[in-house]
Length: 268
Image (tube, rainbow, N blue to C red; front, side):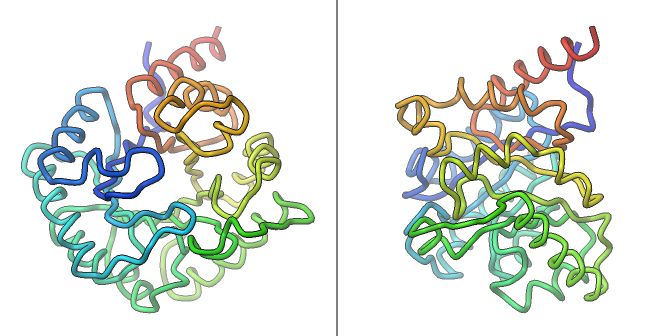
C-alpha cells in the first residue's frame, strides 16, 4: 500500500554552504545532482532546489551567486527526469531563469513581499506558487517573535496575501500556503500550529508543511540537526490527517514509510 497521490513529498536540495542542517553537503552541482537522483529513486514527488539559506541570521546572496548555484542543478535534474522542480527563491530574476531551465514551481518564503517583479513573473507563468508565513526576515525573525493567537495571526496573514495575489490577477488554484514552521516562531508557536494544522485548509488552499530537522525538534529531543530525520517522520505521520498536501523533508524514504503506515492505520 502506498500513500495517496494527493499527498506529495518534496525533497530538499540545498545548494548552499550554510543551511542549518546540511550546509555544504550538496554545495557543488555533482553532489546536489546525486542527492536529487537518490530522492527520485526514493519516491519524491517534487524536488525543491534552493541557493540561499533562510536559516536565522543567514547572509544575503547576490543574484549572480544564487543563479550560479541553482541553474546547473535544475538543468541536470531536468536532463534525467520530468519530476516537478521547485525553485526556492525570493528573487524574481532567479525564479525567471530557473523556470527557463526547467523548474515548474516558485517557492517564495517572503510570500511575494520582497521583490515586486515576482508578481508579474508569477502572473505570466503557469506553474504552482508556494507562499510562506514569516514574522520578520531571516535576519531578524528569531530575535523576539511574539503572537497573541499564533494560528489566527497566521490565518489573517494568508487571507491578506491571498487577496493581494487574486487582485494581481493570479489564479488562487495555483497557490499553496506554508505556515513557516521555525520562521519567526518560538517552540510553543510551532507546537500550536502543528496541533491545529487542519485550520489552514479553511482557507481553501493546499497546505505545505516544512518541519524537517527544524530547531524545535532539537529543543524537544536534544538531537542535532542531522539526527532529526526519525523525529521529523514522526511529525509527518502525526500530521497525515490534518489536510497537509505537501511534506517538505530532507529524508524522502523515511517520510514515505511514515506516511504509508499512517495511511494504513487511518484506512483500517
